[in-house]
Image (cartoon, rainbow, N blue to C red; front, side):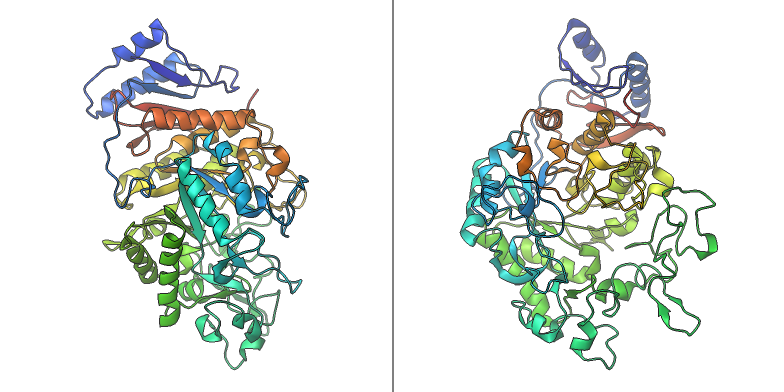
Length: 598
């Protein structure tokens, strides 16, 4: 018997300590009990453990055991449930062999930085060195370049222009095949990001003609076009709508009217926010009767049906700004999207799919896509991006009315509570109630694990940030002047310059039940939105890199990938949970807090 503890010293500065001693062995041995779940045993052991340690971290009990869970579908490699994932935006990772090869200057912002697929391949050992099971790579297909000078640039990969080609900024088809092959040689799986909801920016019929294979105006939604021509409907590059919008006013909340009875698409400049423009949440800042939604959310979004004027049709048929919204009810669109997803899966020999903007597409279409991929020789699990605070709505994308939809989802309900709970982040949808309060994360976790709403919690991706978020090390509590969460200006407090809070949040990500996701740059302490990585020179000695490596090691050594989980205790500043059954040789107790380092 042995014990492993990775904990906080009393001064609340994290340290990583792994040791075996007579005292530790005796302590673990004394807790050897039959592997039966008992609430009384949980409480007694928890009380003894907390009182015996002034430090908070996690402890694991027992000996190595084999994980006897069988893959749910396909080969073992393609069963991605419970695997740890490193997220890469190709444009921001490495420039080897690309348009800017050899340039090591940092790059961020809204233009191309020219990272490449070959660059990822060159640094796979760097990723494997942290112990990750999989990489998730943003969409590599040919994107809108940005040649109109007004619509932005497709560097992130989500603005497809040719579904069957690879963007030349990223490389070639051969480069992608080599990357997948080399990923497999590192004994890692490859998760490909795809988009089925929309295409590139569209401002005319001629723009639409450039999209392959969806090159006709009939292939996109045209809600509210009335007597306008398609060119008139799509002409604007700002000041939407039209086209009708799937985001914010009109979809997530109702539209207010000017005195002359015309629509105010800004709702007096407040859009769908429930509080006045500040990061302070109380009765005086809540808009009360003028708020479109309830007090517990900062603003209205997908699945917030309790927001006044929530419009399901606009959510499904509206556009994301100027991105042509594909109409999946058109047979050509529906069938070709399914065929293309299957072609990508087989042509490039990938292991899983992450699906962008899932809640803006119909359930029956999503179900068909997952079923289509399930019928492949190597079935493929889809992880959907479902950005919502509503847990029952979120769960409905895994199963609805007894029918399977997608295999899994990114776990946004928990991310929103974790960002606010661990870092005091004021810009998450759940911040009004959850800032510096871990009770909400614990309650939401318990509901996900015990309600039966989800068919498979092991296929929920947990994370503190992603490609669309402020990095975890930059999640402030006190905003900078102006309060823009994506501004280069940095706030103060929260996880800014606080290694203890960052470590606690990463411990939750890596050891909670599900698929932990770490975003490129987090292992270097990056604090800039969508920042490049190459200027850090893939340093493997940072405390963040080593800490993530340790957590992945614990996951592997204690076979946590598909192990059960239970919430044990929470307060405003503490969250304690367990992986595995109480008193079993492999159970891991996880203690986290949101206390500031001193």
